[in-house]
Length: 482
Image (cartoon, rainbow, N blue to C red; front, side, top):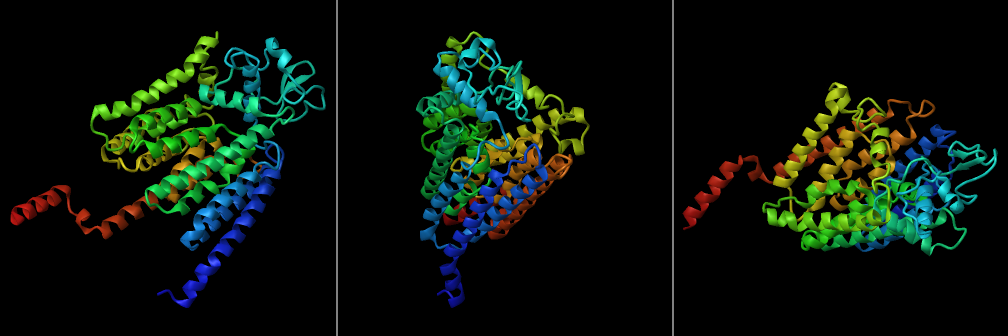
């Protein structure tokens, strides 16, 4: 029997959660409408902070909502949150302009890997949206010069594209399905549809394994989703959808799950970090091959048409991008920030390799084959804390894994990427923001993990014994029974 006060709280919980969700929607709308990435990062930082704070409070309120209301509320919120990303053009990233260009180039029968956007050979494909003309149109900070009097919204216009083939297929599909003149709205709408589809898959997987559907709100209502997946239209959301589907299938249909992992990797490379989690508890090489061979085969097959159609490398600017972002130079752009607090810069990259290999080995040997997302989250979260990436959209994959596994303590790691990207200017929180934010994220993850571990030991007293002693007791019990 519930007390009258508890019954009242459960009755009011849906209304309270809905009200908080409306406040979150209003804050997200204001955040997306704030055009301050180049001019007022301090104001933009506070809007981001308000969005994440309301997100945390709203998800906490959802815990008290009766079970019958949870799925409709999460789904309705997912749609509404995604729509907030559509209220303005891309605000904090110009990547979607390259997507639109690559789609247009492919529709014209040209490989996107063969020509940079500034190449005069593709001058016939330019328009005034992607390639503005005149001093006034080219005065913005997000414009790059192409020739006299001509600029472009596309970043790095003099290098070839780096996007893998499944992403390129998505770009040309969006181009083919879009009405003329729709501009940025096409890719943003695609991102919104994919984001809501991820929520639907999360709810389906959670329901099938009897887990709490409230966990899906970690993705569905997270501010990173409307900002990065919808407003900035990052193709990472496509890789997230394929990754979630792969993790849901790999438990019982290993080969099909492996094929979906191949599609995810051929959309954004980053999902390759999920493979150790997908191999959790696998002991036989035959079982590992049943996953890895389809994954590798699909990646190869998706690249093959572009290899045949291209005269240049299908890896484009990928190597140059890694160098540009400082992954080969520990002192550049805040990479390996936490490791560099305790180790010489030159030791950072070897330390990353050693720690990641140790975590992968642990997940492979001790991971739960019925929960591949658990090991995937541990590997992915560890990689983020070691590499300390400075782009917030990379964390979309991490957020989806949090929703699958329910371990909220990894969300600050996703927030750390946003803080590094938005708030590290002197006008905002300052250049120490990446190190500070990732240090706080690491502290949260480690503390919560320790608490969960000790709580588990207390609730299962046998686990406090050494493993050899538990086995000895079991053998003694069998002999006595016999």
